[in-house]
Image (tube, rainbow over all chains, first blue to last red; front, side, top):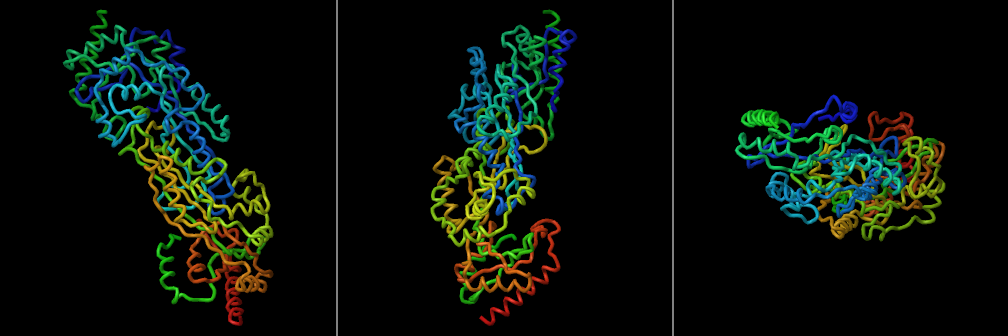
Length: 302
Length: 302
């Protein structure tokens, strides 16, 4: 999953050659009820590294501590202006283009199984943000609210014990998960303006990749076909998830090729996605193949 | 220089056995004018690690980004309350016990050579804090103002490119350099109260060591003896630096044994202190030995 920076342009320039009626995406799993899930959208993403260098090498803090600029402090102060402790993201225009979930989205989210206890047990999380505890509100917040996540902080001495050093450099890796209809370009532009306006022009922004969010209409006939084709294979239809928290390059297919993009993945809760010993279950491999055959069969009749 | 946590207590409990008239410290160097420098004080220090853990393991940011607490953000928000962009340290009582430099201190600092260009060249620093540019003001700020330096920041993903992860843990290494008459105990206590008062009780403070500042009176007769003994050896007397920016355990000797503590070190600007290839010059080794002999000789007559 290195990401392809050329995919979007390639699709745009080859709309004719890539013309199709529908698209099946490699994504998805059966959940712990053995219910196959149908993910109809992916959040967008904008991943940046903020960095600042104030000296050519680290300095003994007894020398520089009182008189040299400290890049770690500058980074902290800059980050502090980007998101407030109440989780508000302060980049100008950040919330301008957000389309809230429709009533249909809310109904679909309400039908999904409860996950709060699972999260607490699996990740050791004691509480959720903004006073949320469980239910549809938590699930809607999980995917329909955009994020600004610090994925990493790096500066100076990181070993055991103490080292009295004033670092030369500091950096933060940050991802923004975007909801319809936000775009990574809007975030990048807003972030640069925000940092400049707050006196942090010396903080560099490195764009490490992004893509807009995109969704398929849950009431598209092809969605219904794929969902229903699961009934024979899994003993039940797929359950629709209107938007996933993760990201992926579905935007070009949905927006330039105008395709309904549906999923028919064969993972399960123990798949260990992107981890050592990533695996699939043989029974799900067979079920997935059968599901695809049924989709092709039914689609040929439609 | 691992630091001895037992030294202070040992000295306190053995004041009788350790009784003396004066103390010569292994510290100091000739500067780039070949002038031997006499350092008459060391700043104190309080070194802490602030850390916070909000989950048992890192979480995919597509899952947790909108609803799980982020320890890196909490650390940023907490740090931001500790020091303001104008360099003011906001811990209650932090500045209460500071004794400003005396007129004698200011005169001694004014007599020291200019270092601003040297700093800019050696460390690639473009500007100094608080609009300072050079001269005695810069030199006084360097050692007579206490600091709060972020020595290190650690959280989440730190490799190349992007990894979309919500970290489980975040930490910061921080040193406070203390000036007379601050104490590490006062800083630790104030910092805990400050974090609690700002809603950061979940941030742990690990005390990684500290010692109070201590100084010897520049007009003590023993100082004059040691400074003058250099004349025969180095061709000039030592130049007095009333306070060094660095730290060391001179407090127990000055405050419990009531000794004047003077320095007679044999470093030089190319010594590479604490670095690979740390070295001394043979001529300075011989000069240092001669200096000590003269100190003992003159002291025996006093």
